Structures are given as C-alpha cells and as structure tokens.
Image (cartoon, rainbow, N blue to C red):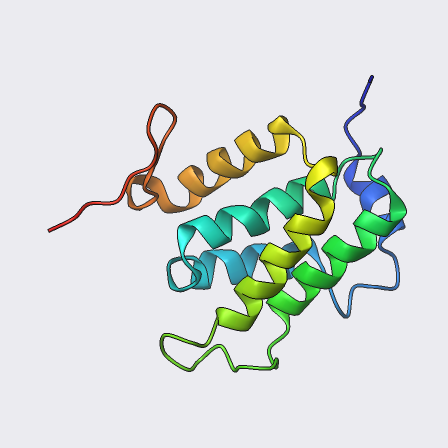
Length: 140
C-alpha cells in the first residue's frame, strides 16, 4: 500500500470544528506535562494514536475513535480528576487502551517507532525504552 504523509493543513482540515475537544498543541502539552504520571507504556500508546491519526488512509471510524480518546485525555475535567494521586489517570489510560484495541489494525509500525522517538526526544534518558530490550524497568 502506497501511503503519503498527511500535511498539517490536511490534518487540520480533517479535524476542523473539533478543536474544542482535540488539538495537536493541547495533546503535546498534556503529554509533556503529565507523561511520567500517566506512565510511559500508556503514554506510548497515546502517542501511537497521535501518529496514527495523521495517516491519510486511516478509516473515518478509526479517526473518530482516536479523536475521542485523545480528546478525553486532554480534557481538564473527566470521570476521575487527573490531580488525584495514583488513580487520577486510570480513566484516561483505560480510554487510550480501549481505543488502541479498537484501531490496532490501522496502526503502522512507523507510528510505533515515531512514538518511541518522540518520547525519547521529550523525556531523554528518563524514557526507559531500549530498541533491543523494550521497556527497561530497574528493580531495587
């Protein structure tokens, strides 16, 4: 399948009118601010969805599922408020994981790789992923 990279203008046109629920900028701000609170595996799933959303060949139904999940993640008010320690992001994570499960057949290997690269750029050495070993967890 020959895929073309969707431009920012094309992406913005596709989500026009939905910006009160989702925007790239709001997603990136939330991901950077709360990434370590959400957990890197869950955050990786969210960033995979973020890159999958940019695929011009993504079926419309999958696009709406991803927009809904990422929109829920960035909403300041949700089922379990994010400021509650330990459990604050459990609903957000559940929504991201459920969405990923629904659209998994539309997720490319390229989206997964781009997500790892982006998280490494944002969190540097704090991002515990190694291409050879996967997620590396240190045990005391």
